[in-house]
Length: 500
Image 1 (cartoon, rainbow, N blue to C red):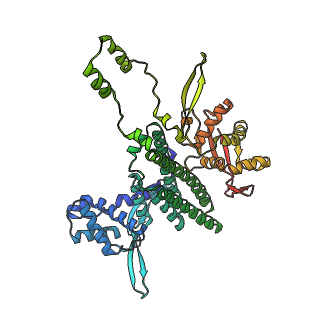
Image 2: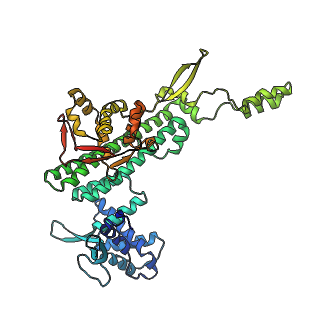
């Protein structure tokens, strides 16, 4: 018996794949026939980026030239006739049908339980006119071929977060809310992956700055201010997305999808902001290591003394030892299982603010020293756990809890919620598409990226009562598409958490 998830939406899934299956097929290109699909994909990708960057060199002759360059890139021989034939194969199906949707394939309608025709096109004509009413025809991708390019780029991880953000904005502008949601989901996933990488890089800087800086030397070649400017531009893009969405919401156009998009934009903006703080913070740390003269010398210059030169070659070999037993203290230093205490490199740079020394007293009254690593965290987890604790208690006792309960709190508690925007972000995190439920297990609670799980772990560390959550599943729903305003300062959807 097939799973319900296997058959649900099969019509749309086949439709999304049909253009890929037919790309470059159905025609003979002599010795280029085996490479037809690869050449066609490169042509579509070039048209995509020319359109993306506002390059209007997309006439039919330009397409033939793109085909020529693509064939040459693959190291293959071509003729103008073959180049034209490959481009023509993207414009219409065999038989040169000039119908608006000339490519045809079948898809299965799972509701009607029948096969239906699916028609589509790879390229569409845009007519431009100049001041003299002269018409010029250029080509751009259809939604189907646009999806082919974007999916291929995402699979190869070639599309950076800036371009992905612009594509999301482009979809929102065109009113393609479903594509925009998928694009923002991909963008958010990419940002989370980069956050994880930056967190690991931050740990490496603290543990082994020389190695970390050497390995990442070419990662951020821009000046620090240029990096800041780049992230400022990203935030402006999120502002523009929200502006467009709220404008479309006022026009009552696809309210449910727009609400979902507003939540997604808000979440992705928050994660992007966290990424910006991490990246800029890491660059500043590296800058301190590079510009502190004493620190730089100790990290990169070879040591003045070493065992081979200072001890063996300069003292023992020329002069020898007075008696054989004198060798044992030297060998003991090298091979003893209990090493003598060495000051860690991190202590040397504690004035940078990353490490501090803590003194304990043992039973004999002697002080012992240990290092405590302090990593800066932009989130106020103490405040967040204080605010969320009563809500999680209600969730455990009543089986559900709603964000609207904040409105019934005392004024001073509402003010604390309003001042701690990160606490509201946790509600949004529970509403991520395809992740609207979360299973609480000890293994999952080890996550350092998912702030939902981090919050629950910190609550358990404060009070073992919250360990009742282990083995439970938390899911979220929205009672209506109308947002609520708290203290006339924060707008949020009426989220409700349930536990099963």
